[in-house]
Length: 249
Ligand SMILES: NC(=O)c1ccc[n+]([C@@H]2O[C@H](COP(=O)([O-])OP(=O)(O)OC[C@H]3O[C@@H](n4cnc5c(N)ncnc54)[C@H](OP(=O)(O)O)[C@@H]3O)[C@@H](O)[C@H]2O)c1
Image 1 (cartoon, rainbow, N blue to C red):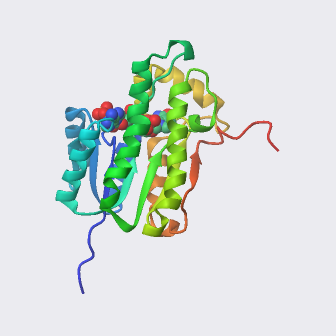
Image 2: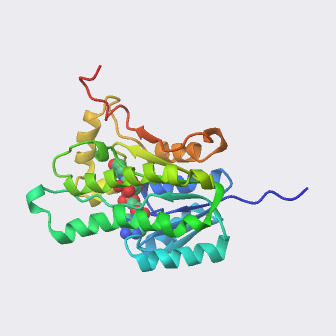
């Protein structure tokens, strides 16, 4: 009997938060895990903490040159992968009137353009029967003040995933989108909200709290598994009811 080949996942933005939790989840599922990020020290620490067979690759997902280097590296290391989790993203918020061209480009380059070209460039490495998962946000469907660019970048991601779920189906590659509400990750600090911001968001969630990163990771694990073999083109909310309109129904 031939030995079953170990499955492989590439996680963009895997040195922190949801990406890191997903790396833990897939190591637990017996995968080889490659995480990316911009900060070499954070990647090194994450790989050390995750343990073998996790490995890291420094890449700015907003840079097409880095995406190309990532593709070459993944091809040389793994030949093909089972799952591509496009998770890297930033949260930048501020009043509409104060959005500069530079801020607009930074958010769009990482959250949308980078995601678009990461999917395009790594697609040839995704096995038949494999999965691409995009990490969106409940902001994609909402109208949170101060989130004009952020929300648009995530809405564009949802649109891309919908198209790809149909376009890639003949290749037997499933494409799904995870749509979290607020999650307890370092992003809140980086976006300038801090713990107070998360507490404020928790109060708006019907279940009275924000998500923990492993709760998102578990869904990535499920949706890419055989048990979800017929789930394609789905936008899966994980938000404790945050996005359900209080007056609907
Ligand atoms: N936390 C929330 O409430 C929430 C809610 C909905 C959706 N999301 C989405 O979830 C995803 C993960 O965020 P998180 O909450 O886990 O935040 P996080 O802890 O800040 O993690 C973000 C990850 O993305 C990486 N990253 C950011 N820009 C990158 C770039 N240009 N190239 C490569 N890697 C990059 C970061 O690493 P480096 O800094 O080293 O680059 C880090 O590993 C994001 O797409 C975010 O928009 C988060």
